[in-house]
Structure formats: structure tokens, C-alpha cells
Amino acid sequence: QVQLVESGGGLVQAGGSLRLSCAASGATFSAIDWYRQAPGKQRELVAGITSGGTTKYGDSVKGRFTISRDDAENAVQLQRVSLQMNSLKPEDTAVYFCHGRDTNFWGQGTQVTVSS
Image (cartoon, rainbow, N blue to C red; front, side, top):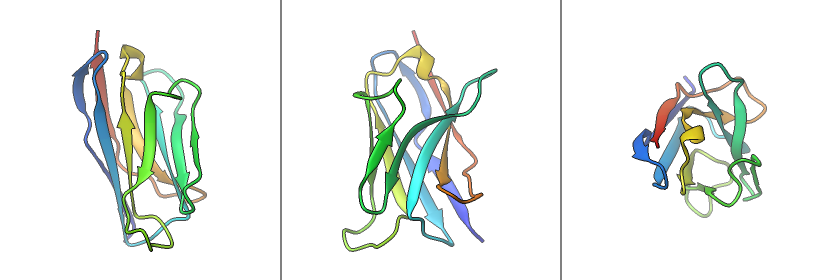
């Protein structure tokens, strides 16, 4: 059974930091993306990383968020990634999901709430 499990969400004040983790089991991925969805809004891409280390970011988080892989250096594909979120803003409040790119596998999400 393939699972993606997010952890690390919580409540933080504006300007603070959080680190989210995504751990996959039952499969490995060539790329893993983080998405978020705020109430009443569409799900949007936050950041993504490939097994080769290529990263991409949504415009609203560039310069503040960093995605990285946590697997062993010799791992060919991805199972664990992290998302370091700095300088958090109230508008970053959302449920954050990790997703195996080009697959139907999603995590259950973790809530991030940034208070002003």
C-alpha cells in the first residue's frame, strides 16, 4: 500500500518558521511536490523537487520556502522530502499536502496556521 504522510504543521506567529516533512512508503517517486489549499481557494503548488535535485517554487513563496530531500545521498528516487518555511505570513495559512508527481498519490495533509 502506497502512503504519503506529512508532519510538522502547527500554529506559528507571523514571521516565524516551520518545517514540514513528507515520508513515502510502499513506493518511491521521481519527484515530490508540496501543494496547499486554503479555505475557499484552489489547491496551489508550493514547491517541488526531483530525484536529481531540481527544484521549483510558487511565486508567493520564493525566497522564503526551501524544499529539500532527506533520503540517503545514493538514493535514486525520492521517499522523504522536507519543506522549510521561513518568514511565514498569515496568507500562508492552509492545509499542506505532499504529492507524488505524475501519480494519484497524495498525503492526508497537515494544517499550517499563521497568526498575525
